[in-house]
Length: 207
Image 1 (cartoon, rainbow, N blue to C red):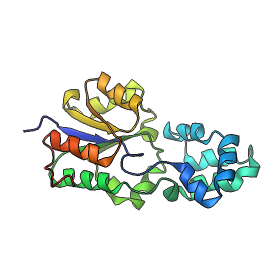
Image 2: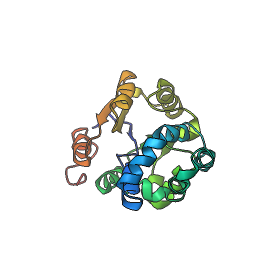
Image 3: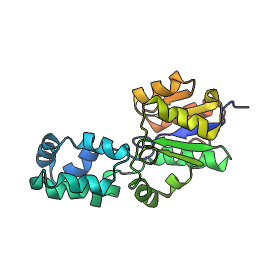
Image 4: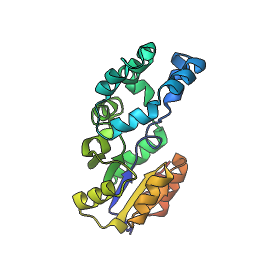
């Protein structure tokens, strides 16, 4: 018997890769990408999207300020499913196997409210969650304690019976501080091993 009531997945760099630099290196070249990211702190602006701002509105607000980067800024919206890519296939298989076993799975993710459905359309396994805790919808963001408290109150489960994986140390620490079981995601095999150790999947299931 396992003592986990729900397994909670982060998404970026757990289920799909999140390294926007790779996309721009391939499309506009490394030198121009470095200049673009130097001229505009794009990750900070994207944090506002994760907090609830609309992706297209954010892009449109930046273009008048940085007209020389209009092409690259429009790509942030227009090519979203090429930027937030590719899927991490082993992790996706683990998610689907947990669902097949009847184990409750949630996502707790820093993600925009309007680009998350686009990623779900591109990666149908992102529609498999029993509950979706998306920062842009909630206007709360990891690692702020409020979003973890919201998850607890909404799902009604004991924090000690939640198992959460995320690739960022600060997000894991915030969950652990509330009594959640946690796994710092570094690679799919390590996560697979943890799911086996918790009695949620067999070694064969976790391949």
